[in-house]
Image 1 (cartoon, helix red, strand yellow):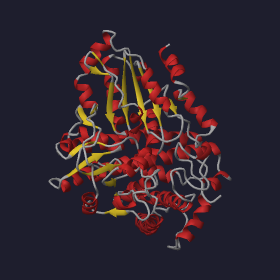
Image 2 (cartoon, rainbow, N blue to C red; image 1 turned 90 degrees about the vertical axis):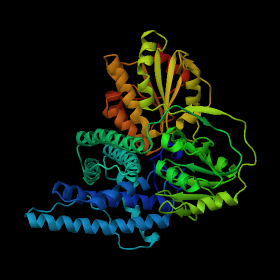
Image 3 (cartoon, rainbow, N blue to C red; image 1 turned 45 degrees about the vertical axis):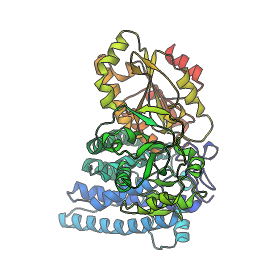
Image 4 (cartoon, rainbow, N blue to C red; image 1 turned 180 degrees about the horizontal axis):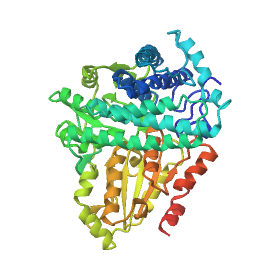
Length: 548
């Protein structure tokens, strides 16, 4: 077995990818990513202790956030770039360790060592690094680790990866928090322990959810501070005649810079996937050449991008094999694919040149629109109307139907569930899971739309704030509201959000399309006992169970 990865929902046979990732990563990419995580644990072991001794560790902070984000599903598939990260990490690890030893010696303190040290990187050859990584694979760890402890440790690791993605987006916009960085180091340092007690591991699991809430709050402040609060906005979802660039991923700053550089160039810019919510931010939608959204969720990109007659910019995950349009797709930031041009320092001229050379849309498509932009600010501004509608019996239930979308069978459940929701109910949605139903017509209840698109996956923060505000208005707690969580998951950001919901004490979550392969039966029993989490069944059965 040359690789093992089970961090996403689409993992092979529901057990783990052992030959090639369903996501498209090969064995070298998978193993190099494992080496990055291994090195980050030891880096954080020393960085955490330096922070406790009052020493700043800004280089290590940045490395941990970017390193973890790099290993999120569908981010970096380029072995050369991963190799360079490993080498940089190895040098930084040595420097931080040396600084730690220097500081403790000055203070007369005995230095500590990790119980499970990281592998020593002694070569820059990818084949050598690949072979080294076999020693630290999950399958090797299964040979000696308690399976339930391993399961919980991986939940923490994946939660940290998801939170790191949000922290990186916030950092790009100038929003950082030293307490957040300290926890990343603390948690990764904890993962170097050999036989930690179950209760301690469980504690770190919930603490990861708590810190992810802080990170989402940080990113919310970054996004709204830079671009204003999202506002209800009609968005065109059909093409406009002219040269074109489509932007996918999650990064608002990249979109803003591209809009600045394309202004007056005769190029129309479209969002794709999780970039759709950008069209509701005042400081982004003011650009007239940001004309609408193209396509659907990430898993449809190979067909949609092949048909797109312009240039494509991937700002973060989720990228798929672009073999049919390699000359028109560009990556930036942490996302990468071998032999795809990578744009650095937000200088997007190569993307612009490719768009100008391409044919573009030769005619307008039939005009079609959807409405987005129901972030917490927009919803809470009409909270009195919502509360009155609930008290009057016009709104009887709220359903949060959202999360990551994917290609695996079983996700039509979310379309059918949304369609079967009673007419006296309101649907809140977020993340790319919304594409399963966001172009359907749901109508309104007394002027309140029955479908409220809250935004990107990180806008789960808005959903939490809305739920808490409703609970306060009705003098109860969130679990006592007529509110049900129907969630889909795919990758590690969804894990981070789920841990945040657990930290908040949210119960009775329905999760699908399948449960994570990295959760053992014993760990699942703990989650069921504490939070009554349950797998989805059928829309009819689940609605009957929820509504009675």
